[in-house]
Length: 114
Length: 112
Image 1 (cartoon, chains in turn red, orange):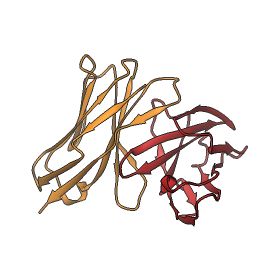
Image 2 (image 1 turned 135 degrees about the horizontal axis):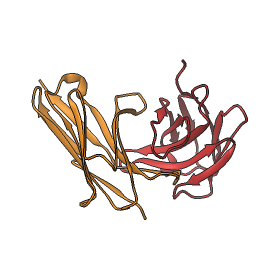
Image 3 (image 1 turned 60 degrees about the vertical axis):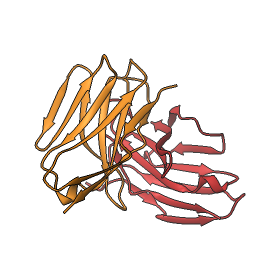
């Protein structure tokens, strides 16, 4: 069974631009969640989608948004990029959700904002 | 809001010795506590988890203990090996909350 796939692996953008990251979950998984990882803050929960609906979100500004398609693939968008958005963005998939079950993570997209 | 604190941020142990990483959580309703291991260039991978109705769980060289009263849980790795070198994250969540809170991570170095 293929694992969680994230594309692209690396991205370089400049301040003010926007970016879209993609995540393909494990086949059969309906939940996709997104995380921001930085050296100082560790892993921070961005939001979770289940069956195309956002079920919960973390404490991030509205510049961070996402969506999920009918095939469970998910995209995350960051608009008006800031230097502080430089981070590793991870997505994870699971059968039922982020609470109380195993998450399967992709290898992440490393975003650098110049 | 909910918070998970993890200590230490960095830990170096001699190969063959034991390593202990500790986490505390603030939400008393949390009932699921997973531990993830992240190797260089990879995403985190679940290594063990525990639910609030259990005080301890063991899987070969890895064990997790939970003290609900103190809102504290710990990861224990015995007979450490070079491949145990990685970043470890604890986390807490509760049923039907659709949210998970991670600690800031512990970088574990196994010294030869």
